[in-house]
Image (cartoon, rainbow, N blue to C red; front, top):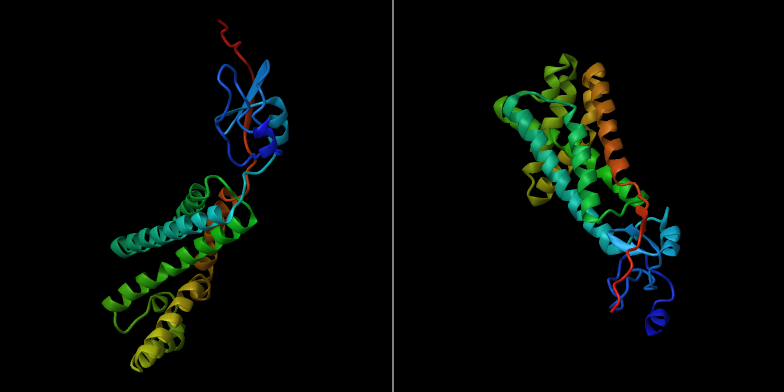
Length: 246
């Protein structure tokens, strides 16, 4: 009686494993299980709760959202590192790596939220995917500039981009000599260049850049789909075995 008064409404976000010895009870409303039962989140539930839970979304909380962001950022950094390292070591830039980055970010966010999803998770997932893929161009550019001090990667693709490339290199070096404020500004410019790199690539190489943007959009779509809100899965009905007496 006290359990019913303290829990007037079943909480479908979390199963509470309590019951009375000698009989099976629903892990959500705590009522005795009759002849049939269902399974949700590996917990035994009564037909009434099962009907109410069908189509319901897993409970979203601030803690779940923050864990999802934490996991997603970690996956984005990992994806960026793997993408850039492969390109630097092999000299081959594979646009299809964007799909792997989107998969990593989406799966990581779902893992961090314990299966909770929704629109705000999806927005964060596509932003992290785009940031990871685009910013991977920065370590590639730095490595190329180190090996070819008088060139930037875009000059390999378009000979008429000398002015653009020259301005991109001169500004960071100029502000970098002005102290810590200049270094911060240079880093901010470098980050902006990285974020804009997919579109700069489109200008330098329209065909290759367009293909890269399409593949990137598919990777972002992966992250979007993985982090969509998913209904609670309910399995059953199952026949309840009679409890032994005596």
